[in-house]
Amino acid sequence: MAYVLGAITLIEFGTPEQKRKYLPDIARGKKGICVAITESHAGSDAAAIRSTGQRKGDKWLLNGIKSLIGNVGPADLCVGAVKTDPAAGHKGISTFLIEKGTPGLRVGRIEEKMSMRGSVTGELVMEDVTVSAAGVLGEVGSGFKNLMKSLDLGRLAAAYAGEPLRSIAAWARCFFDSADVRGRGGRHQRGELHRW
Image (cartoon, rainbow, N blue to C red; front, side):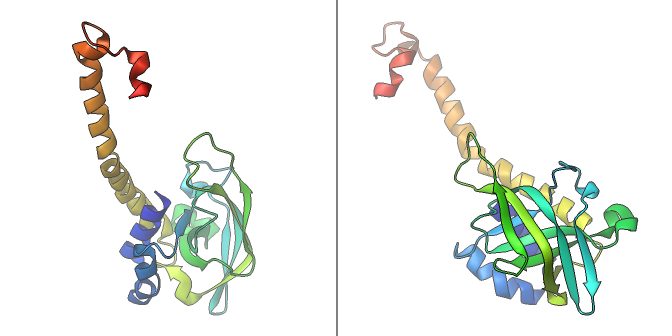
């Protein structure tokens, strides 16, 4: 899901130069992407983030700790949300493209999960991360609005991705409802299905 959300955000709000630079390798699976919105104190309230972005000439200085970030370990590129104008509330949130290996950017604590172990989830720490003006994704101050649109599109993608699972579940319901599986004259009982 992190790949989809990151790619959607880049497609929807990236400049032509940003798209040319990153999308081909993301589409080919050569590079990973993550989206860093969540912070431990804010949970799902994206407007309550405290990470900051301060303009320093033609560059931006980013600071903060993001939590529960999917694909954080293998990601080569991160869409990071920070407050560039804290007084403006959600209208003061901006997004930046941050490349892996940028000084001050590091992966923090990795979460131990019960499932979905194929996606590394953890903290992303930004300590005086410098990003050029070319790294601003969308317009300064439009990050919240843009991310909400991306999340809506991402939810549609997730729903579509779940369609094969719904088909399998429907097939399984029909299968389990058949007389043979319930044991009415059939050779297999529910507990024996693992032997097939």
